[in-house]
Image 1 (cartoon, rainbow, N blue to C red):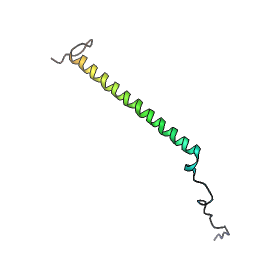
Image 2: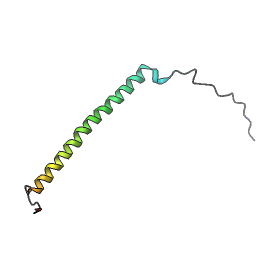
Image 3: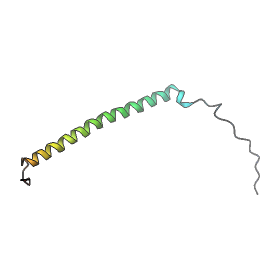
Image 4: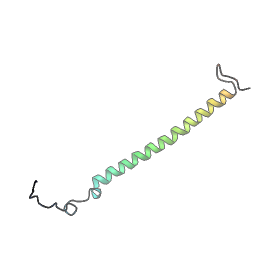
Length: 73
């Protein structure tokens, strides 16, 4: 059997400052949110462009405007 004489754990919550309250952490969080908003705006544009291209291709295929396209009718 092993016996230890370790001191009890200290309450670190009272001795450490909250990291979320620091200006550097707030700036980092703001930058993270801003980059997420930029990605969301870019993805919004990207999926709209992709849907538009797919619709254009389907219309061109349906009208027989594509070379070697299989005709529907």
